[in-house]
Image 1 (cartoon, rainbow, N blue to C red):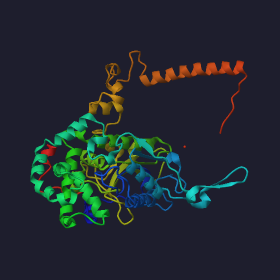
Image 2 (cartoon, rainbow, N blue to C red):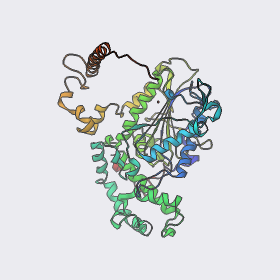
Image 3 (cartoon, rainbow, N blue to C red):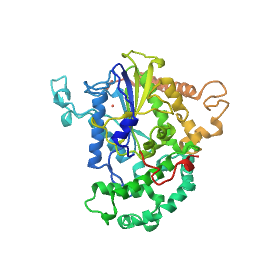
Image 4 (tube, helix red, strand yellow):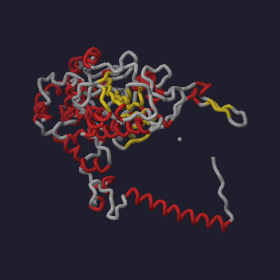
Length: 475
């Protein structure tokens, strides 16, 4: 995504108000700079580490530190409280390492005073690395190994999404661009023929070609036929990659293509709802993911209508932020009528000199949406349960086998009821309790007759530059 600061500031709207109370925040972040996908395995670079650490430091200054500009009510400023923060990422080296780097900026080492503990015998134990704070990163199943996959849907595991994305390659938009850009890609052959074969150098591989050129332009001291790699050529390669990946990640007439964004929407709803009901817990939720999820969500949330830059691929370390807030002082249990949600986006590394901007969602005019309006908008496309996901994706194997089997569908629309009126979750609890009672009974007999006793033990903008529109693909 190539939005200039001036354009963002002119189109974005203010997002800070002195009387507001921030109740909680959800952040979705892209990873930092990495090695190219065409030379797997991809790894986070030192530059990427710095980018993601800088973003983490910014969000600390905004939401966490004692002098934060929009401090989350009740969140610990120095020593992390594990119940207040949830961090997740797919099982992917680049994304997992980005999450860890981000957290180092968010909750940095606390030094020898706070980072120590006195034992009963008087011994003082110092936390290693000057009070380094350990924050667990949960693994999410979607997006596994996404940074080693050149295929955008390669990590989605959604059958219908894969079929839908493949349909882009049959569209007139794709065929026209494949034909009209053939000479452009042929001109790049001297630069990239060490990685791509002749039949691979075309618009069909627009993203992986751009990715290789982009990484080389940042890191390589020498580049083959570098005189061919002008700023104009890099810009055109970027624009074509934007166009290509948008076609694979979203289609207004077939929204299953945007399954990654639909799944993210459900996770955002669930996380913010947990903040609402958590009684002081779950204040900050952070997830790391790939650019395709950004683009899918952009399309579903109608963001390109606000700013055409949202058609583009977001830069490294880009973030989407969802603020849950009230227009007044904090109360122990605010009602849903008192709560609002605001969406903010920043393209690339976030810092105190380059901050997120608020944008309206779902075609609305205002950037601050009442809770119900926000939920209604998200629920038009969110896939929030395993059964919804399996049904939408048309999957019927693996985790979806039980969700789509005839025996699971019964008379209830959700497929979770039994004919005796006891739901499967309740029946499971009853079964577990019976089993536990039997086990405890056996243990009691063993202790009684065996003499045993219990012992206690003490963690985006110029995508129409080629003269083509998105109308064909979105129709």
